[in-house]
Length: 473
Ligand code: DMJ
Image (cartoon, rainbow, N blue to C red; front, side, top):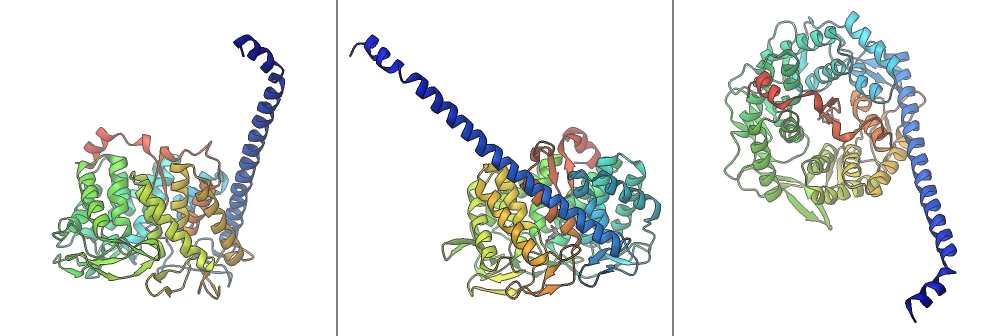
């Protein structure tokens, strides 16, 4: 057939092709619109549940650290409250656009929160929740009174770092600066680089970052010949008191902060430590069991596996692998966590992957698996991760929702309830669900760093040359 004859015969099909193309474009758009609608409906549902829980906290626990949702009462961590729930909730309320509720917290902190209290506080826990929350509040508001509170609080934590190794004591008294506790795990020793670094950046006083860095490197410099760190150390002598090496609860955020603090400030020492640490982790820790990859516990000197008990906190690791560029490993590991979640509809606090049984069946409304689903959905665009989030959300609605807020679960098998709503449920769990389910127009993942408590900091507000000067590296 000549070219002309061919075009003449094809001409009659042109209107059909055009209609088909139009139809496909329309149905593509329809699907996209439907997806977007579904996404935004879920995000709206998370927002509504956040507001409902916040109102529950305000009604029954205002001024206290924690809401006990089943007994409709409250609890403080210490003899006097530190307003941990509201401070933790602040950045989530801002991310969701609840600005009036957030303003109320800001005013309350300024008018009523003072730290000159004769109480021993857990240095790690209040650093990630109270100091991190206040710093995020300062970044959102620019209110110098909030920065003054954060600085006052940060200075009250500093005496904890006056030890033989530079690792903080477990407890410090906010009024007297006295310390308690002989040993510490590596998460409690090495999760300060972000909060203390940000405080140094804002105050232009390097002392905070310097203490944090010394504490982190007190662990790193005592790594074994094969490059692994242990779990627990004597803060005065620097002797390892537990030589089990892992990425589980008790060490987890030590690694998270090496990488994220490097991203935010650009201190090359952190990048070196991260590169060496992740190489050793990947060489010795992962193992395959039942076709899934598990990050168990090994001996820090020999690298031999010594335990197959993992904790649900470890589900932060796919997110960390993803942000540090290791998408393939992140995806594999997330499949393991998703499998574990789906065994019972919620995940247990501790699980033995060789015995196939929960060793501590509590679920405390923890965020890590959702955090990693959010990171992976962001980096891959694969709806698998979005759908994982939908499952987790529906399970939490089914098993943990109560008439005023949400409660923890005593046993993921029986679903027996527990009268507690952890403060990080506001800071992390609800925030990660909301971000996973949509509204990326107003919140762009790449613009922010999340602390281990999911307090959000805009990356562009930290200039790296300036950071080197202000943090002293
Ligand atoms: C949070 O307080 C922080 O993420 C911490 O680093 C460990 N995990 C809890 C929530 O599970």
